[in-house]
Amino acid sequence: MKKVLVALVMVFAVFTVAACGQDEFEQGVFEDRVIVGNTAATSGPLAFVGVPFKAGMDAYFNMVNEEGGVAGRMIEYIQKDDEFNAALGLSYTQELVEDDQVFALVGHFGTPTVSATREYLNEVGIPRVYYATGVSSLFNLNATGGERSSFPVQPIFDAEGEVMVARAIKDLGAERIGVIYSNADDGRGMLRGIQLRAGELGVALTSVVQVAPDADDMSTAAQIMLAANVDVVIVAANQVPAATAVRALDDANSTIPVITSYVNADATWLGGLVDVIGSFDIYGNAWIDIFNPDGTPTDDYVLFAETIGEEFAANAFAFAGWIAAATFVEGLRRVGDEPLTWESFINAMEESPVPLPFGVVVDYANGRRVGTQAMALLKAAMVDGAPLWQTERPIETITEILGD
Image (tube, rainbow, N blue to C red; front, side, top):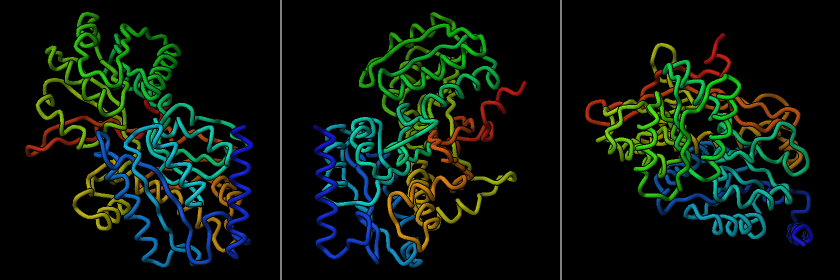
């Protein structure tokens, strides 16, 4: 029944466009503009992620539009606030596709909405460019049909879990590893990667503890880590539960180093843990690089900072929004003056590796949809009274981290 409904929606959409004299164009494509959209949490507990993410997208699209757009088309961006709520995310996504008639979803935001809309969007086949999540269901080595329209960029959580184990062993010298993971798609995805890589390396996970993503007390998990005498605690969770876990470890007087996800690698997240920094080492992953080897900012970063302004110039979530917009624009530029359709856009994205700002490269050839798989290691620090992340190890693949 759902497939029939989707088919009827698309037939109606085509009829409506034709009736408006735009029958030569794909949905959301006009002579002078192309319409894209997303839902993102710009209010509620995750607004500190969604607001800068949207700002990064706005800044990039505005920059492109001020330069004349792409192939004579301005980019019109529609954003809806789903409050990090899966039901709202699904409803607003359907509005964007069926009512607003967007050409593509750009910066598809958050694990709840991405998970809730995946089946629907695969059936529709609309391009989805950049996901603000690394949920496991995005990982696909041979996408076909509607899944070819999916273009993840951020690391998938399973792959990040493997990196976490590699860092714990090779960079932190861990022999006994503990894991606190949230019982959600992100935490479970990271745990799968952790278990996979630990098994391949013959390393036993000393203690693995599940926590609810909305738990406000993780003292039991912290005490279990202390009792297990682990060398490193991997906190496999996104922003809110990860902060709760780190604070619980601090309350338990732990001095055990912690490694957490790239989704937490922003000064905003550290801002809620200022009194914890220094009690024990806190590490995070990162998948972008804004510095040259000599420590000076890259040209990509200088352009970003000048364009977005001081408020978000050091915000990792704004970096992500900028990259999301840049990924879509790269596809438009590859299509160029040729007819812009879903199929031509997909083919253009697959034709060769896609270079993106801040040193990121993603390869979508032959249906490969796995995001980027190289990451850096950051360490939390207080500098001049402000919390920030400092680069401990450069961007490396798992093979490079593990060496021989």
